[in-house]
Length: 255
Length: 282
Image 1 (cartoon, rainbow over the protein chains, first blue to last red):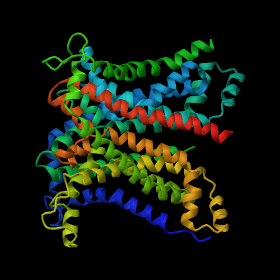
Image 2: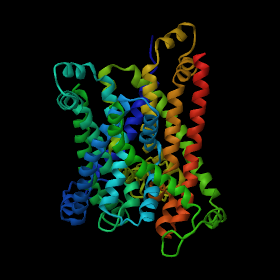
Image 3: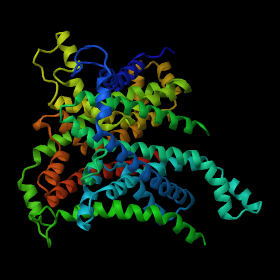
Image 4: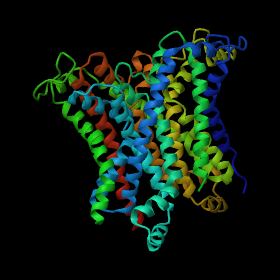
């Protein structure tokens, strides 16, 4: 039967809507015009300005440090959580599952505000530690979901086979379960890493003096006069997002 | 033995989420009943002063604006995501993976950068304004930025993947032969789409609507950078109270209101699902 062209047209239009602003940013990062309304010639000058902007590189360093530490923590906690949720069915696991899934639907601002209130009430100084705690809290749920998806396909008779062949529980876990789950765990960790680099709202609430992450730096630059430099920075960030997405895509395919 | 293993596996994440998710969320609600102190901290004792101040400050127009913007965002997102999910579910495996990747990649691009992209597109000297002036669609002094329409546009831009992904998941399970059957029985393509496909994916439709609505309710960055002073949402008021005035109890009371606004539609949806699920099973 003849298919309508309308859904295909909407899909195409939405994808154009998704990519047009990003393409515009990339294009304007090479545009000599300050506002990018029209093309005034090719230039590298915004990238050169960016290279000299130390505050941006400091922010990048802080962001990467936090993302690395919090994604590793989230990877560990999320994998354990997924194993527990998959293996056991009890009242404890219903509570556990609720606590792990609720952050997925909680708006960022509420998580940021409640963590800020929590840290102020405890008298904790805002800084690297508080950002780390916040980032782990919102990314554990995502890692758990990714690993849980992997566990659903996992053949648990393999573990029994290893035990039958004389492996201890610990050896079977280490030599059979972990290697087979690893692509899922890494994909979850990569997601946590991306989310940590991306986060603006929650970080805004729990960051202190001297812990300005890259999104916070970009937001404060948006209020200033160095707008074309943000184009150049955005282009580099979009490129790295595409690379990370391609990497996660490959990991996901290696079943 | 089994019990000990369960506890060992569960404890780390459970303890973490209790300490840094459940307790802080409870704390925010309880802080609405604490007075503020002048140094920007939390005052001693319990009182209703903060709640009284919140009621007297007259947030009703902002609450209304927040709900209105989020509802319209949800409707637009669903209208765009429905045909899109329909299309993605029907194409070949290779195309499907590519299209899904294309939906997800802009969604993974830094949030603040996507907002900046729109801010520079809508800027009076930006590309979109210039293009529209060239086509004679708007006047020379048109202001695309700093109004509710711009906020709505960017809200749709950022929330749309939240609608597409659950709807696609539902459409993937839909049996498309039902559509052919409807067509064979004489239904027009539109009628088959509305009377067969849309009811078939109603669960996905509901979770998509809920997801977009709830996420939009908590927005404050988009109105802050894209909207004018009259387009503020509840989230903006929370940050202003928390950082502008350093009045944490007041900000917490507002956050508790927002939490209520988020929980009510979610509980209603859960209730509806339970009622509906039983009906479908019997």
